Length: 237
Image (cartoon, rainbow, N blue to C red; front, side, top):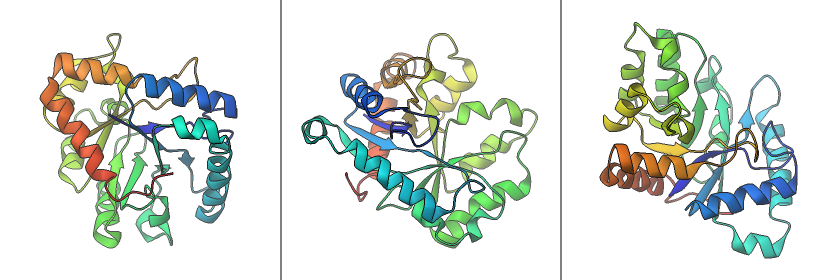
C-alpha cells in the first residue's frame, strides 16, 4: 500500500522535528506495509513563494537521504506538498511545481468552512487550465462544514481524487459518513497524515485493516491500484 499523506521531512513544517524522528516514522510505516510514501509538507502561499518552498523542501529531503545505509532500507519515496487552497490559485505562476514530482497530481487541502460555488469552480480550473488533478486531502474533516449542501457530491464529480486519513477509519471515530464515502467510491486514496511518533503517529495499518474488514478486500485493492496509477510516472527519490 501507499501512504499518500505524511509530514516526515525533518524540520520543515509542523511534522517531524528531527532527522531521527523522520527515520523512526519511515520504519514504522514500512512495518505497517507501506511500499511507498508520499512526502507532503504543508504549503501556504502567504508564507513562502513556490520557489522558496521548493528550496527548503529539497534541503529537507537531502537531510533525510543523507544516511546511505538507512536510505537503502526506505520504502520508495515520492515528493509532493499539501497545498492549502487559496483564491485564484489556478492563475498562480508555477503552480504545477507543487504537484507530486513527475506527475500532474497535487495534494490539496480545502477551506475549513462551507464551500462557495467560486471555490468549487477554482478546483475545476486547476484541471481545465493546467491539467492538474487535485487530490483532496482528509475529506472527512470537511463533511460537517458542508451539511445541508451537496458540495461533497459536487466535489467528487469534478476531475479530482479524494484521500481519507486512516484515523477516520479507526474504531474510535469510524462512523457511517466515513464508511459510506469509502463504500460509494468517493475515496480513492488513504494516508496516515503522520506528524510525529506521539500524538499523530503513522497509522496506515488502521486504514488497511478497517477497509478490508468493513468494506472489503476488493475496495482496498481498488485504492491500492489507484495509488499505483497516480505514481506510475512520478520521480522516485
